[in-house]
Length: 129
Image 1 (cartoon, rainbow, N blue to C red):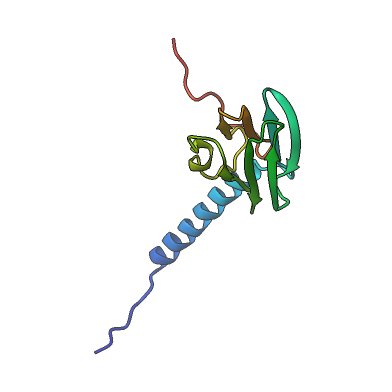
Image 2: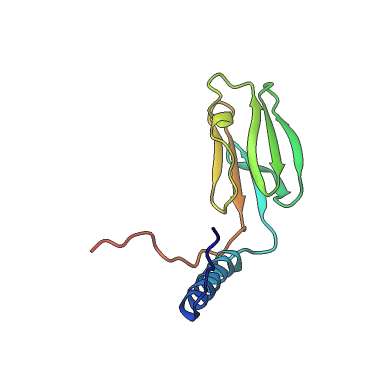
């Protein structure tokens, strides 16, 4: 009914190799992270807010014309939860979490960008001769 399973030396080496490879991949992905990331909120090209990416925050961004965007920072991810703009594209852009990612609300002239969460060590995306 039950068969005895024998783990050979080759099986043990294969399992150890997979665990070592997984550890190296995790170490490489987390090594590029810096300690602090920033969420930079700009309106019409002028920086209005600079918030820590590590601190959970809900902030209503409102201008003199009554334009509103509800910015949420949670678990090192950022998104616009609500906005009173006509198209709502900023809400549908979803969550961002890496340096250089941005959310743009054109009707409100609002740009939310993440800065400083990781070092860019990958080099260029492409080279053309």
